Structure formats: structure tokens, C-alpha cells
Image (cartoon, rainbow, N blue to C red):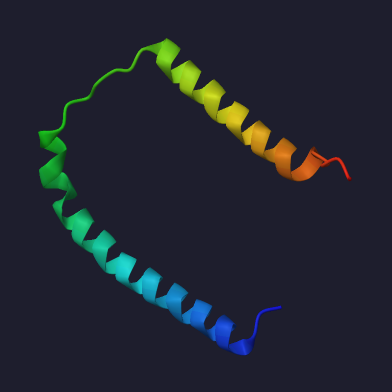
Length: 75
């Protein structure tokens, strides 16, 4: 169980991280219109997109199987 000290430290870290990332997002949105002209759109092959999606779903399925279904043999 979490102690009060650990809980307060976690909440403080969460607040600090969210407030500092908000400043970064505000700065990024101000410059985003200028940066859009620098990048070119590159079309990826459909086979690559499908392969990445299948690999990602397979890894998610493997993780779910490992943590939810797999039972280690008891010695």
C-alpha cells in the first residue's frame, strides 16, 4: 500500500509534469504554422502499413496472453 509521503510525491510530480508540458505545447502551437512548409509528405507502401499494424496487434495479443492467460507450471 502506498504511504502518504509516496502519494503526495506522486501527485506533486504529476502536477509539475502537466504544468511544464502545457508551456511547451503553447510554444509549439505558436510556431507550428511556420514549420508545416518544411516537411514533405512521404507516402508509405500499403504492405508496410499493414505489416506494422499486424505486428503491433500481435505484440499486444502476446502481452495480454502473458499477463492474463499464461499460467506458469508450479514445481
